[in-house]
Structures are given as structure tokens and as C-alpha cells.
Amino acid sequence: MFTMRISTNRLGAASHRFAVILPLVCALVVTVMSLVSLQASATGWENQSLAPSARGMHAMARIGDDKVLLFGGDDSSLDDETWVYDLSNHTWTQMSPKTSPAARYTHAMARIGDDKILLFGGSNGTANDETWVYDLSDNTWTQMSPTTSPSARSSHAMARIGDDKVLLFGGYASSDLGDTWVYDTATSPEIAVNGKGVWIPDGDTSPDAADDTDFGSAPVAAGTVDHTFTIINTGTADLNLTGTPKVLISGAHAADFTVTVQPTSPVASGGGTTTFTVRFDPSATGVRSATVSIANDDSNENPYDFAIQGTGVQGTTAVFRVDADGNVLADQSFYGAAFNSGSADVAEWVIISEAVEASDVLELDPDNPGHYRKSRGRCSQLIAGVVSTKPGFILGSDSSTLDFEPWTDDSGLSTDDSALLALVGIVPVKVTDEGGPIKPGDLLVSSSTPGYAMKWNRDAAHSPCGLVGKALNPLTGESGIIFVLLTAH
Image (spheres, rainbow, N blue to C red):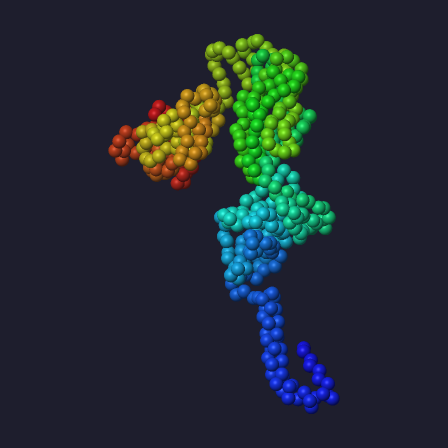
């Protein structure tokens, strides 16, 4: 409030001037009041009509020069919406990225870079330890996989510090937490290696079977053991493997270990992987040890190295032998009056061009020579056999020994997996009543259901059919699995 004070002993002499000045002063006061009111409105709160639904326990953080990101919260149910508020035009926009963190509340977010937000933790009833990054430039959420991270929590706080770091403190997970964490957003690779899915620390000197760094036993000059390891890049820049070769074996018994498959480089950021395989072929009995070394451009783990070992045991020159796993090996032909396997069919490894399962009827894949697929259509002439359930004899080896070129579809996904194809004998087979009720003795052919057989109707057949076999059980119901005696196709 403005108050004007005038001296009474000078009022008469100034009355004329006061009458002239007073309107001008009043106008000035009104103008000042208007400016003050306008300034208060410009710098205060304004209610925006278009906005996310009413909610609480969400998180917000600045993104870009004049925008704010909102994610999640509780609006009577948990929410996974992503919204951006643009100060330049006072509008909310729902972003709808293709993927996003699961619905949650009491999480925390902080700005990292001009167009990115870091999100950690939160709860949907159970606290989690997820790390996500939102990129405004392409409207994407990406789940990060740092090697170490804070434990699962909610109701914590985060803030950006400096140009490339975020500070996290406290939170709640069954009790209040008081730990302090710093997330470094500087662009850099971060290497990790695991065996059997178990992390192998850089500099590890204690080989262990749990992470495949202990190769176990192998006969001297008569057996080898292969172990495959995975390199993971959890950093924010591509990881370059800089050595030649990329994986090097050194140490006391380096000659007993060979890298048979080298990894590829670079390894993509954000969880990219590549693998390498080490073969143990002992030249003497006893514990044989060496060191794996991987040169790379991770600033604090170059080279990444760890110890490996295996044990050489006395081998045998016998041409007929049983290994430690119970496999019987013969270097020449096997002859015998009888052989009891306990199973009922003869199967052979074949390459498949699609996923199959036991009891599926298979046929040759005409689109991919040397490959097999589920049967297609009624009375197919391409019938080859049935996926074996428990073969008595297995011919050949897995698909890696077959002489067919691997096939790759348009998406680049390799489909050169293998399956055991039963050729003769008694096997369970998927069947349907499409050709009529099935009883023992009926001949079976392929049906219109992929991978299923049906009763062959001689009178209804208009062209030659490839036979699957002869039914040994009746079919009860519209479809099921029955035993079938495979026959020549």
C-alpha cells in the first residue's frame, strides 16, 4: 500500500500546485501497480489446462533448454506415461515412446546432457534397482546395465553435479538408507567378462568351475575341453579390443590353451556382447595354468586379464574306451550280435529352418536345400520323418558337422539349428482327426496342420502321398499324440 503525507502549514500555498500534480501522481501510482501485477503474473504459477492426469509421487527433471520431463507416478493406479512440458509455448505433450520403464512411483530423475534424463529405482509395491536413460532427440528410453549400481530403493533423491555426473543419496527399502552414489555419464566403454553367466573379475587369480575358468580334467594327448566366454560392454561408448590377437594366452602352460574362436570388435555400447572360445589340450599330467589377457580401450581395465587352469590326467591309447561322462568311444567299426539301447527308434541329426519340437512331422524344406521344416499341407510328398523323443541310435553328429551351407533369412537371423529326425522305429507322433478317426493299423500322412499327421484316405487321395507310418494306438479326441511305427516314405 502507498501512503502520501502533506505538511498542513503549507497546504494553502501549494493548493493550486497540488490540484495540478495530484492527477499525475495518481496516474503514476496506477501505472506502477499495473507493472507490479504484471511482473507477479509473469514470474509466478500459471495453471495449464492440458496436462497429465492428477497424480502424486511422480518425478520431473529439466531436459533441453526450456523443457521439463515427467515420468510415472500414482493416479489411483501406477503410471508409465512420459510427458514433456515446453515452457516456450506452455504446452504438455505425451511422448509415447515405443519402450519405457515399467509403471512406478517414488523414483528419482536427474538431467544428464542437454537432451537426456537419468532415472533410477522407484517402486511398484516392490523397490527396484533399474537404471534408465531417456533421450529427447529420438524419444527413446534405454535400460542401462552398469557393472555396479545402488541397491533397489525408492523415495531417494538425485541431482546433477558438474557436467557429467549425477549424485544419488538415501532412499528407502524396508528401512531408511544412507548411502551415497555417483553416476558418471562421461562417454566411455566399460568391459566385463563372464563364463557360464558368472562375472569374472579383472585380475582374478582363482580359477573356478562356476565361471568356467577351471576347465576340469582332460586326458593327455587324448582329449580336449572347450569353454566359451562372453565379453560385455556396459559403457556408453563402443568398446574396442585392441590386441593382436584380440585374446592372448600367456603364462607357465600357455601352450596347453588355445583360443579357437576370437571375439569381434568393436563391441556395441549399452550391453553389447561378443564371445571367444578357449580349448584346453594338456601336454602333461597335473595342474596346467595360464592367463587370459584382453587388450582394450576401457580406461581402467586394460588389459582385462584372469587366470585359467585345467588338470591333465593320464590318457590311454586304447581304441575302445569310456570317458568320464560315460561315453563309449571306438576308433573303428563296432560289431555285435545284438545291441540293447532301451529306446525304440533310429535318428539322425538334421538342420532345421524353423523351430520344431518332439513328435513334430518333418518334411524337406524346398526353399532351403539341406534343411527341414514342419510338414505343410495334406498328403505332402516331401515327408522325411518325425522329431525323435528318445532315440536308441543317433547317426551323424550335431549340425556343425553337416556339409550344408547355413541359411539366413531376410532379418539376418541364423536358423541353422539342428534336430534329431527319427527315420525308422516306434515314435510318438502328433496326429489330428482331419482324415477321420484313427485306429491301430491305419496308415498316416501329413495333415493341413503344420507338424501333424492324419489318417490316409485311399479313396479321397488325388495324388501320391508320402507316408509317415502306421498307427499303433487309436486317437481319442480331435488331436493328440499316439505311437506310430515309421515306414519308408
